Length: 571
Image (cartoon, rainbow, N blue to C red; front, side, top):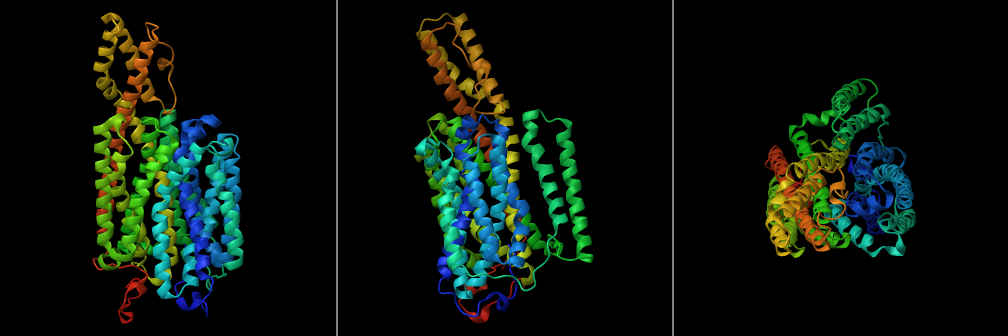
């Protein structure tokens, strides 16, 4: 999010009396963006059934948004610097609203994926203007409060997206099924456009950099060459071209770095200012931030899979369960920005990673312990703990890391951090599919082993001979194994269709119940297994944040009560 370094260039000569109304508008825009990152997750089964989509296409519906956002984000910030932040914000909001309409009216998976790409790109025009508008509109004393509110709202928006998505799908408004999760953006977007036109004050940089289209193409190519084979490889059996593409991603990234260095020496205005990486704390902190979103991006996907595909919960039940996470995120974000981070600095991020990891560990243990019988209320404690840790990391990280770079590089650094968030989320969705479904396939016998004694007991009560029981169980094992091996967790394989060997309706009922329980057991254990990967990522993230100076404080130094004790950013 490109912003100018000199307050005298950004601060208006007079305070805008409508600044808090304008802030509410940009806050709504930021909330809509973060909401749309996760709102799709809970509606996956409904979208897939309605559009007849393959599961890999559904993964792209999720990843397309964040990939487009990451690709356009820094360029979007520069467009605001050059042409005016209000103008670019309005263009982004209008495009986002139209793209949301296209998503809601999509008639096939390809149209929906395309619309999601456009939606993400429009969000990337809109969102980078938010912090720039806050800096240009508010005086120092109010600016810190505005950023704290923005961070707190953003910290809980992802979980609110799951809850709202579940409610909208369950309510089936006007018999539209999943479509209202996108169509709801239309009235909100129109209202925000009208309000922004009336109350928002325009601003732009006095020393705006030029665009770097070649750098943008190289950076986008590197991302797509990496994420596409990760998303498609498992479905296609990992053909050779998937590994070739990942190798080309490394090459494209190397070319991007070389080109950016050349541009600095010749034209100037590189897409990414590589001098930022001379600050070791910032470079390691950025890598830690990327790791965090890889872990959390994957979590949101497997979490909803566990609740819906594993436990068979409705979208509304799964969505309302996510409210507990949102409550925790709000607590963690509000407390960390307003109280903890100004006093404890980097230790808040390290502690937040630990709290988040503890929540993952408790959640995984409870999933395995209770299996198919786990309830929403039993998820309360681990979700609140996980949410608190999430909020403690998300809310203060950008400000703490901005404090590690010179003030004139704050705009580029902010853009990098937001790009890292979106790229990490996209990679998390792609990588977790490899880990989660691979383990689900390998561990499919666990659920069968757990339910076999009960099946035998019920079949014996029916008076079936042992040889018939053996045949029924063999078919049952094949069904569970084939279902776990499916690329799409909602597909019912051929071995699971049709009646039992005896043709008895009672036997079919027994096997149906046992199959649901075995499926829940397998998903619970795989969920726990995947969460341990998330825990490992969070531990690495916390170790990375140790690279920040011990005395690191928020970049918004106006939080300090003593005006004589303010240190410039980067010192």
